[in-house]
Each structure stands twice: as C-alpha cells, then as structure tokens.
Image: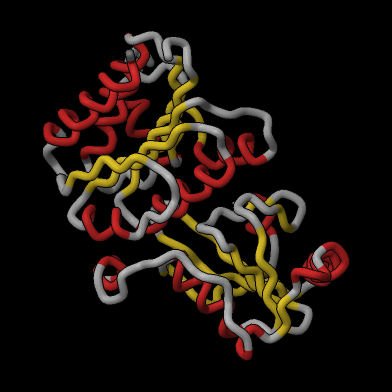
Length: 152
Length: 124
C-alpha cells in the first residue's frame, strides 16, 4: 500500500485527542510511505497549524468542505480515509464520504458517547472506537494495530 | 456553506441529528424527493448527509438539510426564484421518483439509530 493516498478527515476539534491523534497518524503514515492529506474544519486546521507550524507532521493540510466538494465533483479521491467523529455531524460527513468515495473507510469514533455513536453507523467502514476525551493513548494503541495491518 | 450564506433562508430546525432532520422534512413537506449525498442545489451547495437524503417542497419553498461539523444538522428553507427553479428541476428530472404527500405513504427505510440513547445525550 506504500504510496497510497490517505485522507484524515477531522471534524469539530472540541474533543482534545483529535488533534494529537491526527498529527500522530499523519506522521506515522507519512513515514511508512503513504501520501497523507489532512482535511479539517477551519478551527481544526488552525489547531494543527499552530501545533505543527513547520508542517513537519501534517504536510498537506486542506479545508474539509473544499475536499468534500472535490470528491463530489470527481476532481480527486483517496485510497484510504480515516474519518474522525465524536458527534452526529462527524458521522454524517463520514456517511457522505462512504457514499461518494472509493476509499477504504475507517471510522475513528471517540469521546464520551463513542459507543452510542458507533451504534448509529450503518455505512461500510471499520470502526475504531474509544471513549476517551483527554488521554489519546488507548486510541493511539488501537490505531497502531490498524496501521500495522494496512502497511504490509 | 457556499452560496446559501448569501441567500435569504429560514431555519426550521437547528442543531439536531441527521436522522431527525430527515424525519422533519418527511413530516412537514408537501412533496419529498430523495437524492444522493453530494447532490448540488443553488449552483454550488452540495448536500452532506446520510442516505436517503430528503429534500422537501412546500409551496414554492425548498426544504433541505445543512450539516455543520461543530453544531449538528439544520433544516433550512428557501422561498425564492432560485427555489422555484430547483423545484422545477426536480419535477422535470425525477418525475418517476417524486413521492407526493409521503405522510400518507411509507417513507424509505432510514438508517437505524437507537432512540433514547445517543441521540438524546447529544442534545443535552
């Protein structure tokens, strides 16, 4: 899968672990040879830009709605998509991605209501669920296993 | 939000779940059309949503969903020359898909969501 195009789709950055996991995952996948793009809302991308001001961890940072528009208009697509979600809106964006893109979809469901939110997912995706809000380690460990699986 | 920000719209339902927004349209519109995610209305607004995506018609007004990542899903309505054009476009291109007065007929199956669990917590 080296060279495959990966999209990390960030939603509302209200839950702290999203930013750290997005930076971690972007860097890990880039080091493994994936072509990683991180898409987010204005607030989510600002948080990343300040944390990673040199663009060391997230090399391609783009606007979420513009990226969705490009996928809808078939100007771009990805091989793999990790969709972050902690609320219904995040799930709604991921459902749209599932319907429009050819990408293999991973739903990263986190936050206090992660289990309940995960139950509402009906589209085809691999769910990575963690109820954590502040501590990213459990989600990081689960994602490490997922990445091991796709890196081979 | 693209061109919709420049349009005169009214909010019918705010900060809700996608499922509830769809149900609102199905219950309150005179005519309901179902479109795919990404369907474009008003020149450059692509609808983000969980299929089946309902777009309603009430008189000359178009009723549709708009999802904001931090605030949830809204149901908006636009009653203008543009909405009339969109309604005409629906009627011309999807005559066989139009389901007038869905209140009297069974709507398409919606994605399952446990009532009284996540959806309720999200609203608190």
